Length: 105
Length: 169
Image (cartoon, rainbow over all chains, first blue to last red; front, side, top):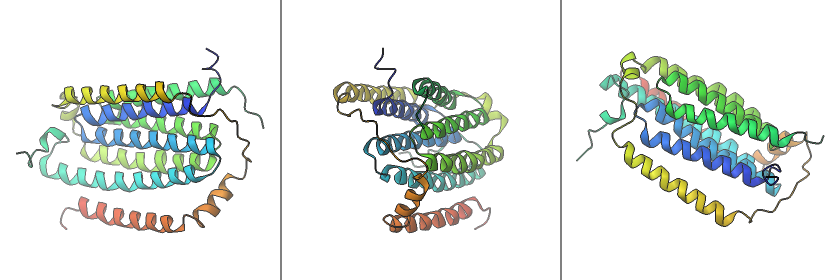
């Protein structure tokens, strides 16, 4: 029990893995496209948490800079993804990803 | 300044993050999911503060919770129709999704039980109050090329988002 009271790097990694798992469940099972995109943001945040935890462990700031770049990338990807969502909604009048099936064989 | 009550804050913030994450993936109304994600991002910014990364915490609050989530809420306002809230919530391949997520969870548990003792338990003494200056000198020095590429990426994303969302191109 006292190993759980002293917070080590492993605690942060387990938290990051749990958030990643929640994001993966959200991406794979939800029907609403906006919630799928928000689950992708959860996944990116889990990765950021890992990066900053390792940056704390090894002392250099490379992990934090990588995390800043990941946040920048997430902003760009969210903007483009939501633009695609708006275009899709304009065509089909629904936000249901089961309806995105024109390329099905 | 010595840290106080670290386990309490860590477990409180990680509990908030996990509950927020569960709320994101299970709420029926996308606005509720967006608010839960904002709470998760703010708790994560606090955990960044615990990890002695105040600049990343500030960037997270300003950009992520204050920029990206506001963008999400705008788009939810544009595309959310009341019909979609009353339909069923989980898509047609949710069983395969749960199986894949269980496999991933099993993989994580296997990695944890094998690699639990790898990380040394060092308490690093990093100089506080110096974080932003060091990040700035690294970002504009060593990572200058990646910085310029990121600005190019943002330009491409702006153009792409505007073109995608226009009515007539």
